[in-house]
Length: 521
Image (cartoon, rainbow, N blue to C red):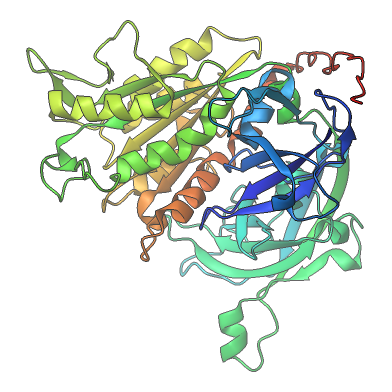
């Protein structure tokens, strides 16, 4: 007997399985311990489906159809990473009526991804964008992806009323900045901040980790270019310059060190049941239950939840609703259990959450107003009871409208910023979401009664930005999940750093049992 394993990865769009690699062939054992390692890109914010196929060698041909198929195992990379000690044990399936054994897969983070850099930038002679004053500039950093697209990885603070800003030094992981690829393009955009959220584009430049690592030098003074101005004006030179003032490399513990040490991610869902969503029985309603397609709420829940559930060992999620009249007496609630059990609001997996959501739509009356503070405080109560780094809480709020309790919500967020929790808000429908942008403290840190949030813990995205006109919801929802979850590892680490919490030691590595080899004659 000669055994080997083939690893496949799955494309997000067309679901096509592609061979990623093969292990070595191991002879004469029913318990092969494969040595060959597969090096893969890992992103917390993406669902990366994997398939392991097992074969018994039957010829010298590389064609798999020439070998005996022994079974297969399906999982996600997140499932492996999120298992205790990043070690997943799962049954091999695929041959009806036959026990095919089990497989153990372990994941380990490569050392080069553990570095962080502390950088500081300044700018000179930026274009003036404000009619009555100078600009209020800030920088937005984008990491380039394999497909040529860009993902936001950092925003600086806003420096008010100047064309020559000096931004505060900031720390970012090398993985977030360039995914560990020192030559990968980093795009930096310069904006003038506007209160209404319609920030004015000043210009952009590109660089790479390798260029930045040269530190302060003539190589790290960048011309800020506005492509539209460059195309229109012959005498256009630039829209100012940005200079790297300092660049310091630090090696530190990573998000995966905590996950490997046993930290659990607790996921809670809160759904907007206010009347502005429209009557659920009407096709125009955002809560309409179309038998052929998920509504916007369902799509957002599934896109985010299917990724986060890999990091929660019991897969039990509290699911809450707000803004509805509840049976039997029509009492208005802003914090009710979707499964009807306030003592135990937990649903099993994302499928359980979806089931409870659909059941609630049939039993409650949509009402109002749109209050966020009660559900934020609900999760904060649990987060406040866990101070040792063993748990981190993520609240997903899916809403259609203008927030009614802004002052109370700001206060709840400022209080929650001291706790091990993050908040994701997905805005569905056509409403204006200016107030939500205010809660997302990427550019201006949120404050309440003179107190500022200790950390930026809110990420907001409008669902309409991810609607694919061609109807390819799989790709567009993958983008939605990527954008709302991308900041979670850094928010998680910022809490652990501020509190001085180190990761628990990982369990000892798996040692396979020793079996006596039996030679068949």
